[in-house]
Image (cartoon, rainbow, N blue to C red):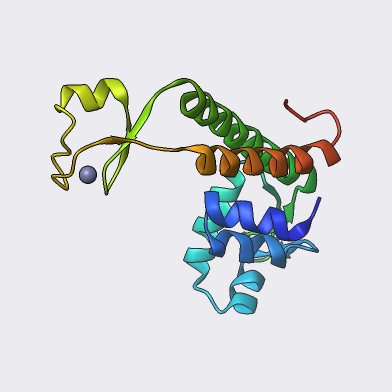
Length: 168
Ligand SMILES: [Zn+2]
C-alpha cells in the first residue's frame, strides 16, 4: 500500500504527530529514542504511542533492567494492522459516499446560499432559510453527483489493489 496514502489517512483520522511516530518505527525503538529524534517531550510521545497501541497499530516489548529494576519499552509498528486500519477507514468512507450518492440521486435537494437540504426539511421551514434568509430552490446536482462518483471510483481503485477488501 502506498505509504503516502497511509500517512494521509492516519493524519486525518488521528493526527500528524501520530504519523511522525509511526514513521520513526521503521525499526524497533524505545520511547525516549523517539522523543529525542522527534524533539518531543517523552510524556507526549508516550501518549501518542498509547493512542496507537489502543488502535493496535503498534506493540511493545517490555524489558526489566536488572540493576535499576526499571522497565524499558521497545516499540514496533504493526504493518499489517496499519494497512487493515487504512482499508477499514476507506471502506467506511466509501459507505458514507454511497449513502450520500443515494440521497442525492433519489431525493429532491434544495439549496439556499448557505446549505443544501432535502425537500421535506425545506417544507418545514416554508422554503426560507433561517440562517441566510434566502429561499430554498431546486438545484441542479449533476456536478455534485459527478464529484461523489469520482471519489467513490478512486477509493474503489485503492481498495481493489488490496484484493479481497473491495466493496462495490
Ligand atoms: Zn441559508
